[in-house]
Image 1: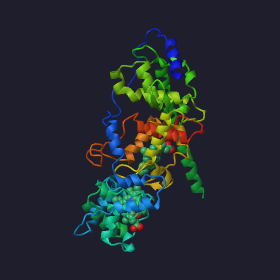
Image 2 (image 1 turned 180 degrees about the vertical axis):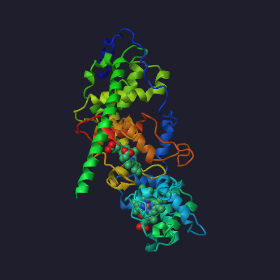
Image 3 (image 1 turned 180 degrees about the horizontal axis):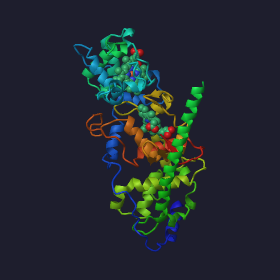
Image 4 (image 1 turned 90 degrees about the vertical axis):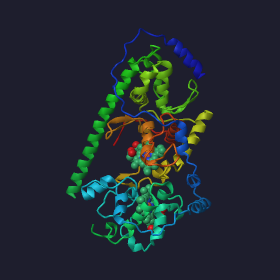
Length: 195
Length: 255
C-alpha cells in the first residue's frame, strides 16, 4: 500500500528545471572515515565471554551469580603482590587529575579508578559508584586478596560494575600490583601519606 | 545564605545563557537543513520539497514514528538512514559527492525533519515483524555487558543512574525522556547531534573493544560502530519506544 503511494508520488514528482549545484559545503572532512565493518563491530560487541553474557541478563539470579564467580577464579601466580605505590598512582590518576595535583604531565587512562572511587583526599573529581578507598589500608585486606579484587572483581562480586581489569588485559598483572601498593602503602596519599 | 542565593542565580543565568547560545547555533543548522531540503539536487534533479511539499507538509509527525519499517527500503530505518536513502535513491546524489559530506548533509536534514514534528507525541509502533525483531535486538544491546570495561548501557543508565562518574552524574535517559529532545545541540562540541550520533558517542567513550582481536587493545582501539548499523537503529527503536507519549521538543541543548 505504502509502496503504491510512493510510486504515485514519484510519478507525480516530475523533474522541474535543472537546479544549480549547491556549493556551500565545507571542503574538509570533520570526521574520520569509517573503517569498522558491521561484522567486525558485531564480533567485538558480542564478545564470546560467558561471564559477560550471563551478567547481561535482566534478572541476575543466584544461579547466574554463582556461575559467574566460578568462571572468575583464574589468577596469575606471582612471587609478590605489593608493587610500587608511585607507579600505582600514575595508573590510577587520569592525565588531567595528575596535572592538577602535581602541575606536570603524568597519569594514564588505564585505571580510571577515580571514575568510580574517591581515594586520595586531594582529588575531588571522583565518583561514588564504588566505595571510597580513602585509608583503605585500615581495612586489613591482604595484598594477594586485594590483587584479586582488582584483577577480577567478579570473583568476589559477580557482575559488579567494576571492570575486570586484569582479565581483559586493561592492566597487566604487574600493574595491578602497583595499584595494590597504592591502596596499601602507608606512604601513599590514599592512606594519609605526604607525597 | 545570601552568598548561596547569589551563586544559585549566577548558575541559573549561565545555564540559561548556555541554552540560549545552543539554541541559536542549532537554529542555524536547522536553517541549513531547510535550504538543503528546498535546493539540494542530484542526478534526478528532484529536491526533497518536490516530493514532500515546500514546507514539508507530508513530513509533519513522521519523525515521531521513527525508527520504523519502510517498504521501499525493505528495512527499519531511523531518521538518519531514511534521509540518506532519500538522498541516494530519490535525489540520486552521486556517490563521490555523498562520500565525504554525508553527515554534513544528513544531520541538518534530520534536524529540519525532526523539527516538523515538534509538539507531537512520540508514537513508535511494533507492528511489522522487523520492528518487533529490532526492538528485541535493541533491548539486548541495551543490557549487554560488553567490551573491555564490561559496561552496558543499562549498567550506567539504569542500575547506576544518578551516581557520580568522575564529575558527571550518570543520566537516566528513559525516565528523563531524553530521546524526545534529539537531535540536540552539544554546546561543548559545537555541533548538532542526532540520536544516532549520541549513541555512537557513548560507545566511543565507554565501550572499548578491538574488532580485530575481538578483545581490547590500547594500540588498535576502534571507537565507534559504523553508522546505520542494525544494532544502533535497534537501540534507537528501543529507546524511542520506551518514551512513547512524550512530547517531541527539538532541538534540545546538551553540554
